[in-house]
Length: 236
Ligand SMILES: Cc1ncc(COP(=O)(O)O)c(C=O)c1O
Image (cartoon, rainbow, N blue to C red; front, side, top):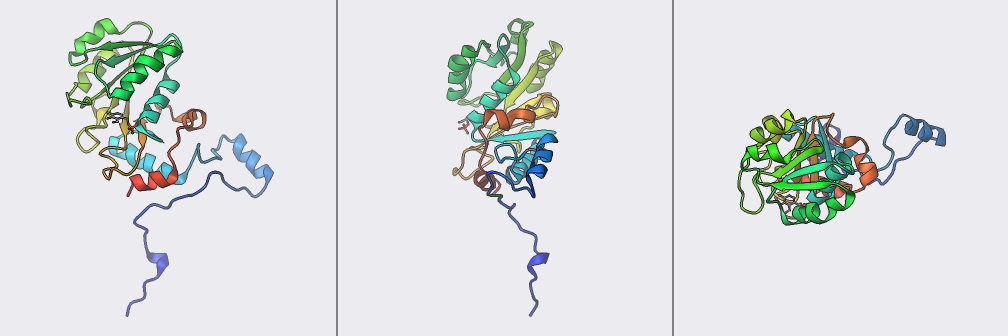
């Protein structure tokens, strides 16, 4: 009978790194790694969540990815890291209820003006964008009625005014729509929905080009990190 040698087996599931932090040979080695800007803590770096980030980036054709504890954590991270006091955010008038609550009630408290318009006509952007506009954000398909917005037409008008575009593509999933290919700068997902597919985990993701993507200080400073067990479940 043939012998199965474990060393020759390729694990079907990615390994789960159950660490909150990492060990070093010495205090000096730890300090040297810190000085090089290495991420030394699981909120900043975990190999399992990184595998999920790379897989999602591949699916969306993105250069960089960041996963978060939920779709709302991903949206909050996006806002906190891309916008500042005095900036303006243009959104489509219809959004998922909690996202709408956040842009109506929370975002303005930080001195960010939110301008809601009907983006089913991309030309409505012309009057909505000002010199202070930094980001246009919308879902497509739109929750709850699955209306479809024209990513390319919106991105073309926004870019003509030097404004970035972020699309919540949760309801399509990358199987049906890849917003970056239509000109969006960032795509976000509630992984809780179709990307998980089993109804047993919360998660979120921000994916985009390396320059626009808020990867740099995101997990460290905002903190809505996705747990490694959930990352593994999302890849299951
Ligand atoms: C389009 C859309 N975006 C974001 C979210 C928020 O995602 P989560 O529930 O993972 O926080 C939802 C949730 O239903 C949604 O439908």
